[in-house]
Length: 201
Image (cartoon, rainbow, N blue to C red):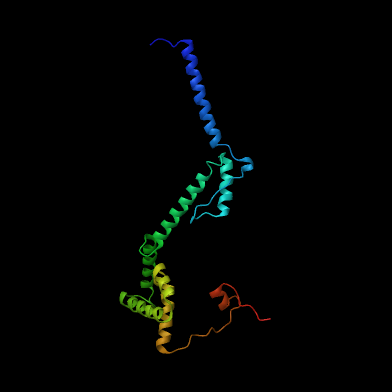
């Protein structure tokens, strides 16, 4: 193959230079941050990101030298990742999910080993039936749905409490009274509502 003529070599060099300039223009467009790193992001509808996320994303985009055109791709990516994380968590921890099954199986094993409510499968079944009667008889549908969805009804401490309540109700006894007051004990209002009762002025 004959060597290119000077004219052909010059034309090839000019073409290569033009292509390099075009590539450089694209890079400048994609990697030139807006002035002062002030990006404008539009949060996805029904997304997981908040305004605080956009501040952190803007700081990262400025550090990476991303343009206003390219930076929003970070928002799209992060929102998709958070959605996937939430969906996986809900799937694993929802009824019959892998984490839900493991957790309830551990609680059931602990309840079976507890001689007060278990000790044998038969006694544990009786305790579970009593706990369910208390739950069905004294709690709203939403509370029952909560226990079913979370599996907390299998927790030995929860089951033990329901069994004790059931026995007291069957025997017609009053709730036991605490012998000594505990100054560190939270008030009923704090336990159930998260804050102490307001004093009347």
